[in-house]
View (cartoon, rainbow over the protein chains, first blue to last red):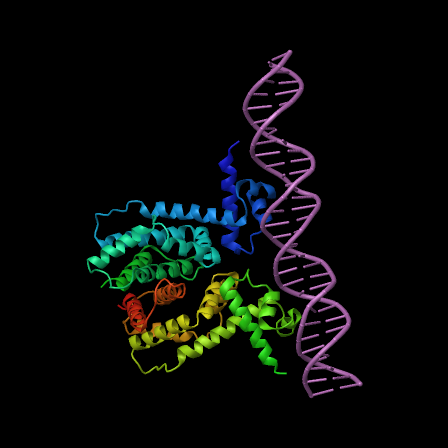
Length: 191
Length: 191
DNA sequence: TAAAACGGAATGAACGTTCATTCTTGTATA
DNA sequence: TATACAAGAATGAACGTTCATTCCGTTTTA
């Protein structure tokens, strides 16, 4: 039968449970039940829980990356490109709350730190759109003269905070507020 | 012997283990060993692990609050007050990495969400220095006309991101960089 | 010496993982 | 076309481990 179908069910169940109840609150048995699958079946697709979680992360990263790169044009000026990327990320986060909650948990866990370290010191990949953008911004003197890592922090720190508040129901972001958020991030970044 | 001394050892051990290895990686037996105490003894001071963790959180919150309020003067203009608070928080975070790591984990867990909800809808407390500051800023038209929650996000999102990067060793924050970070936050906030 | 504090082995629940068995699907045979 | 069989996929009860919590004998305190 369709093999990847079952794999996807497992991943989806894991996403939902972990996003909602944390790594603690998502035992393999529960994931299996939610996926409509036997407990042992999971191990036909994933070596163990860690592998499952890491593959789930990769899946999400890929999806996010695809969404963000849609309609992204290197032709535009720095500011417009930044606004495009920021808006895309924020929109993705608030319209995919499960994905967002999972990613947050992942980043704030041993998994995430290891992953981050690998990324910074390892091979380059997709996320370098940002690095590229910031480096160009530095060269053109349109953003503050700060280490790239800090530009990242200034740009995405607020986005993530705002997305969390939206998802937890502390604000309701409409299109206008989203625009103002990104604009405010740019104000923090620009020279 | 000194009763509170033992309590503090337990709390300190819990802080270190959780900060370093997460909630998973801090079993009660290990906390007890690190505190130089029998496993059962912990239960003379804390009803259970959840209570221990929540009290640890309260302790940290209190400490942070005290540090931040030191030399805080309501006489000064909004911008100066913001810079004072931001600098104090950032300095505290980077010179108490264990505290910071614990707080991050706490906030990104069921504990944290519950706590946050209680706080927003519950009784007012210390943290209202910020609310007060932002409200005054809104009234005087010196900060952007946005919901208070979003002002929070714009102000503290970057601080937390920067602190994390420093602690993980991705940047080294000196006094100058700290100043520039806070200034950038203010740029994002101000009208 | 009575009472309180303490330590750490014992307990039982929960979890990740395994494996003997069952089910499904595709192929060969007559 | 009907039947037998093989091979892989799926299952879930069972296992071993880990952990929070309890219990009780020992030590300290007043």
